[in-house]
Image (cartoon, rainbow, N blue to C red; front, side, top):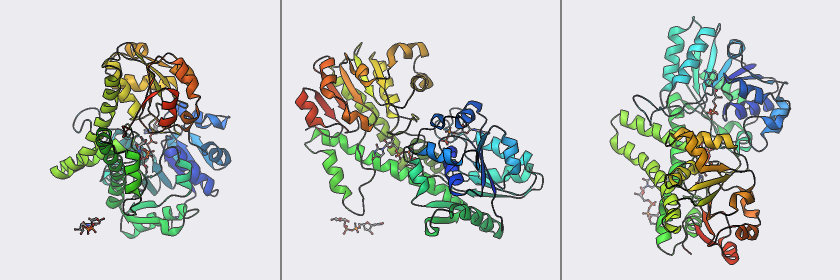
Length: 466
Ligand code: UDX
Ligand code: UDX
Ligand code: ADP
């Protein structure tokens, strides 16, 4: 039976970094080395001031501080770490393809393939390879193919161990997950590899929460879990428009349906649209796989979740324009929040990016304040869309580090992220500093609309017209 004493993780991002920090914390007898090609990122993980690690997650810096340089190491020596590890996690990015076949839908497996080839080149003995990145179904078989045909006789077992942590609650999720899922081959060697990984997690996770399946079920479960969650958000969001036309209130509807134990109360918060690196990418993957098997109805069914989400973002921007007398040209609009959700500095696929893009088309001037997102990231996100030149983005958007400054002299405020601090602002002071009528568009139903109206604000909150 393989007893794991050394783990290597390729990819020090939002998934690899926190996951490995938790394994190292809970398993002091295992040496965990996280490697990345990105020198700057590794330097940040090693920063003497642990508050400067590159991923912001509540509680993460304490976990890193406890294990770092004890049995947790961050390095750019990818080959050295591969060589000494018995178990290698692959946790590199798998963005949606931006070119060629499957453009805009399929996952780009370039980086995964490069990892597999590198492992094949370096490995001198048997290893267990663990897919940690979200991957399309059947990726494990591609990795296996590369390893067995370009390897040097070493035996590789490929496991799928999808990560279910959500950003902002990564440490809690890793500490006490609903479940850990491990997929592997059903051969004796496959079973032994699965057991080796079960033994790692069993250091802190109750055995009944560690589920084992075959590789394909595990890979498909990850895509399905994210598709179901995203579908709940699109479902509740689809009803916000109906609520705004009638006198129904989406918060009351969500509460009423959520108390049905078959439906449950979670993931029913109406919003300006879901974001994040996983939901859209995973659904697009599901759609792509279904289409590639000729399953048109299945593909169309899931694609609708994305169509509804895109509609929600556009609808929010259009509502602002309409309420601002059909023109935002030259008007100052303050964005509170840029991250795709609270308690993270991650902005991938954030609704704020698309709402800003739409308003910039209409010549608005946008001032952004986000408690954790840095200025450079905001321009990067807009430039990445390639809808206008970086100079034009710089001209149309200002980023400030003080919320009161962001709102001063504004025609309207848009709440894009549900950061708790927004609730506690001195809203009278903000009102006094704005142009009148002072308008607030609450894309997260975060603020107390009644209190704001008493001050004098005109408030539009998503999914209610009361
Ligand atoms: C439903 C609602 O559950 C109930 O709250 C409402 O008041 C009336 O409509 P009912 O139609 O009696 O009740 O049955 P339900 O148990 O909801 O099942 C509806 C259909 O869905 C059945 O054909 C059932 O076989 C099917 N179903 C249900 C599945 O195919 N899979 C499931 O997991 C659950
Ligand atoms: C998600 C999954 O939850 C996690 O299990 C998986 O491992 C990765 O993808 P994450 O993207 O970090 O995690 O965030 P999540 O909390 O799921 O939120 C995704 C998006 O949906 C956010 O933009 C959030 O604001 C939005 N959302 C979520 C809503 O609009 N309403 C809700 O009720 C819940
Ligand atoms: P995720 O959210 O999946 O963790 P990130 O983009 O945050 O995604 O992190 C992925 C990391 O993987 C990046 O830091 C990137 O530099 C790294 N990476 C990608 N390919 C390789 C590779 N072949 N070797 C080492 N690191 C890699």
